[in-house]
Length: 348
Image (cartoon, rainbow, N blue to C red; front, side):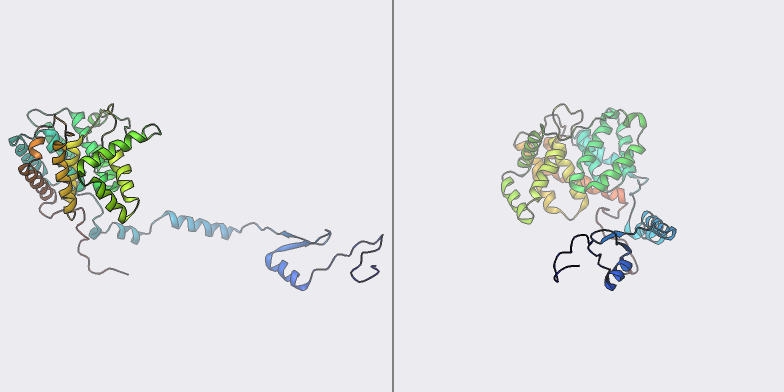
């Protein structure tokens, strides 16, 4: 017993354990806990209970639902009005490419130049089957270029199309192109990556990208970067570091496949013209092609390149792209962003 209220217990006496209050009993019942009465301080122990079979079944059902798409959802994703698939190669597409090849020959334009332009246009139109037809046309010419070299150039052009068309079309088209090509030809293309960024290559890569940007946009290269930064501070950063440095400029000198300065401008013009809706960018890259010859960065071995950089040559490029687009779609126009097809009513 204590001598006074609030005093210490006399020797020999154990402090009494306070009995749980009605509220703590209710709380322990609510939280499924047990009060340890034998401890100097009351302790709460959580009483665990194994999940019931019904609980496991509910979790499994939720996981199954997340890993599967319902039939209505699958039908909606692949609805015809959403144009979800490739553009099939039209029966007459090889004759369209043949007309471009003949016209290029008449104007002194070599195979790499018109093949680059035709490949980029076909990639933009999302027609890998037509790319296979384009490859076979090159091999039917009187003096066909080497098969692996031709397929390698087409594949590299397709990669550069990412900067103008986005990643999905390049993924899908290059995958289907590989499947449609003769296996021995595709397996002969060098398979080692040439654009890996390492700590010791970053500076050189960024320098190459900035040099290409400056060549395309002089004398407005700096002002244009400032204007882009006003829209988003990281926009010029990504354009230079992600595209001009590591994709549009060629990799180091020991790379087995290169597109080069002139053909990269043709990739840009073809993609943007085939897209429609980006006239200012088409104009920029038409000037970019001309500047390659003005500043000396153009390769000397591009047959017909200097003519392509003239006003007459520029018009030939645009007309050839338009003809390929019309041939691929059989007169319907671009597939890049035409809007959805006819649909009666959206269900919201």
